[in-house]
Image 1 (spheres, rainbow, N blue to C red):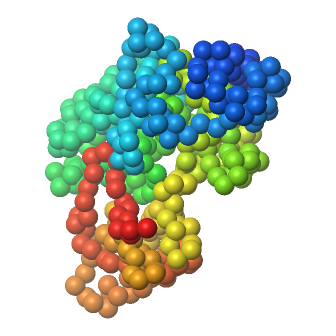
Image 2 (spheres, rainbow, N blue to C red):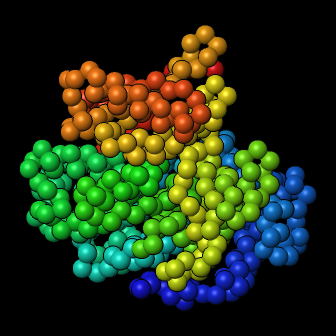
Length: 433
């Protein structure tokens, strides 16, 4: 087993907690003294830095939400001066007003270190050629992965998104061994490769995928690995934390959240009360060392759970399980909570169904109707009505059993649903609520 920083990655849990407490204490004092935003929030919560006497006292501190960033757009809650900032990133704003994140050089160094540990944990090292097919620019994916890959000594191929045929040519010509992109874009690359007569398993050296920026499931992982002959690893982060920061390790069983960089909690989305290990709830993270835009108890909105036993890989930091949806992306259909990840999980277990689907929600009178459009695989696409009806009924039955709500299913030809080079848009909600 290889480690990037064994001193931290194998540190005994008790020592990690002592380190976290020291960092938290320092962070709280700094923000209470120098941030009007946090000073006011702590005063409202009636908590003083002296009240933080142990790590679990973090529960006394107020939460932070995405709306706090939007309300203070673009940079009113930064705690670094303009002269100290070395970079900005800006969110897409697809779910509301954009958010701006500033970085000091130390912030970038911590981001890069986090990714260097993660990339090492999945077996990448000097000599690997990593094709970065995340977008470069305001989006954090491309540049974050770029610097992490360079830090471990790998060779970076910064292809960004688009021009897929050229990406495949370069993948072959430059002996690419790993690719970082969204799972949707890797599926698209696989389809384009087939059209070009390229068998990724046999005609390239690709063996690792670092996939993220959108939810995906274990069934999707199995399909990608079987189809393309690679090991596919999940990566997690948000632009507010820095960008993509935390990866699975070779065990493929949860993201390692480095304890010297972040403190992670799972809270009840309704009450804000912390939940126990293994319980599913809203992911809440405190960034312990961030300088330009510190985050204390930031409620991300992603749904996950914590696993705090030492990982079989030997790393001692806690892991969070695969993201199972978003609190605010959750669809409520006729009173039933529905996550798009549940739909994907079910569809990917049906052999006749391809990798691409689309959920359309409309309101008919007082009732919500949910339609799932799914692509058939080339092998199952047929002009025989009876075959298609059998498949559609099976898909509807499986979805109803999983979601506990009736769903209409529309089967469509392979390749007919929209493809995305960045984050995919799987849900079209037409309801006026």
